[in-house]
Length: 335
Ligand code: PLP
View 1 (cartoon, helix red, strand yellow):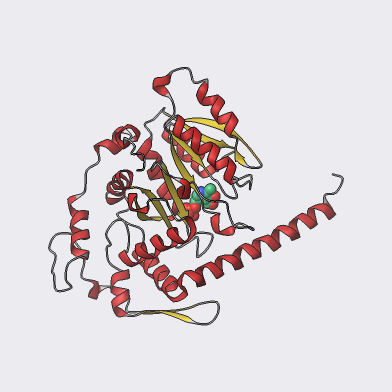
View 2 (cartoon, rainbow, N blue to C red; view 1 turned 180 degrees about the horizontal axis):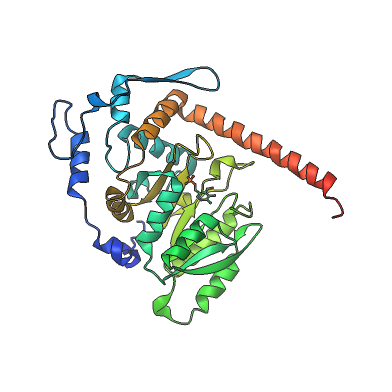
């Protein structure tokens, strides 16, 4: 029987207050209704009035993906906040393929406008201003900039070539002066850390996870470089999450396109629900057009085609690394 966390303890005051948006819930209902349904509720414009009819996109291998008029109509319309249903289904399969989460029924997915949007919402879900968050040191500047502006108390945890240093983390927590203000959240980039490039070993992840259990921390796993690793990455925090204490953020930016702004988060359902409420009243949902283009591509490729594509990408960057290391050895030798 998996552990069950008291998620209310992790919510920020703003997140605890968030309630469903009636208009966005109506969109969700409408999406599940028969095509003959006419909704007067959600302010959906008539898609037949949009100037775009259909599109053919040519891929690098000269094959094409087609957005016929029905796909285009969907790609131009509001979507339920978590995302396009077929794309979500596809992404669920992707998570199972790469992470085989222990009890995937406990998690839901939400497509975001890049993982940065997801991250900012996750930070706001879990933190009130001045509250502490444990982060890798050094850490991705985009997240630090958000957290500084937000007013979080950023607690830097030293890293080494295996990522966040577990001993250092344990020291910080065991020496914390006031047990009432102990951090509840740990943020880490486990693979190809930005900026160090370090990746966490399985052993290290187990150590960090054990500490998270001991101090009842949630782990934010920000993993945009997962598919770029030169060797198969060690199991993710999501894959070892027995307690439902991991929120994972994935990104399509380094794999399909940075400009499409497509990311997706995987979170235990009670946390996911509050994230969706937030998304309902901010971006409403990630771009329908980007989601439809990605879906058509992924349906054409299947999981194996996607995997092959990511292997080509990691090979490319590995070659770039070799070139760079050789150039450094040649031109910066002795400096
Ligand atoms: N997290 C890390 C560690 C990153 O390096 C980046 C971008 O480079 C992001 C998140 C944001 O990615 P996205 O383009 O999906 O918003």
